[in-house]
Image (cartoon, rainbow, N blue to C red):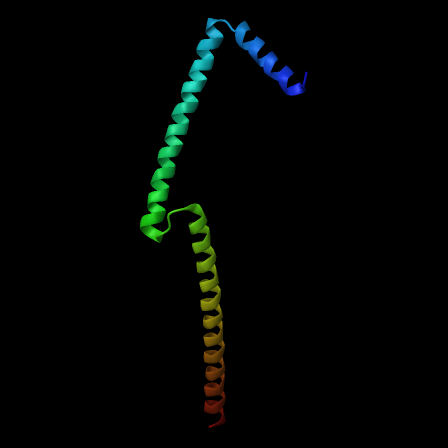
Length: 102
């Protein structure tokens, strides 16, 4: 007999050994877990709707792709800003140099 089969038999014996109070407690735990699952499913539905409405994606995979795309776009824009800033600083330095020479 395998370990898995022994575990199943042991769990079955435990179930038969439960009294009414144990079964009621187990039922309460099951009901709480069922309620929690329903709540989480509701939250998931709301969040998926928000993803679709705000970002035009209908799955987590598409959302992750969108994030990667936006990160790449941010890097490009950041580089453009750095380049433009350096250019402006250089022009400013040149302007300062030309006004001090006069």
